[in-house]
Image (cartoon, rainbow, N blue to C red):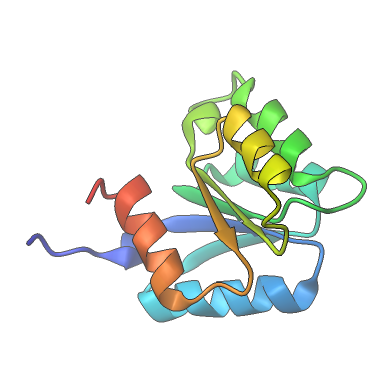
Length: 132
């Protein structure tokens, strides 16, 4: 198995709840990530992702004024750098089938139901960034 250096990665955490942003950021730091960008809604998240071009994005779905689905659709159509190809993982308390199917239809790369664990985040990073 190859050595994985999480310190080389950057991530964005987009959630309207500051406490959730803090918890997810803390979990990512415990994996070794040092460059973590945060945003409080999809609009701010778009600006953050376009500017920072992180390796992976963890994003809530239900936010105002711009929700996660809109964020995902706009990002996937972006022509700025490689941001359209950045892996996006939704983090949501909404596990209802219509929401999950809409996320899949909009080409989300992963979907985790809150609360998420360190292991949940690590598995998504390992698969989507490292290809393990």
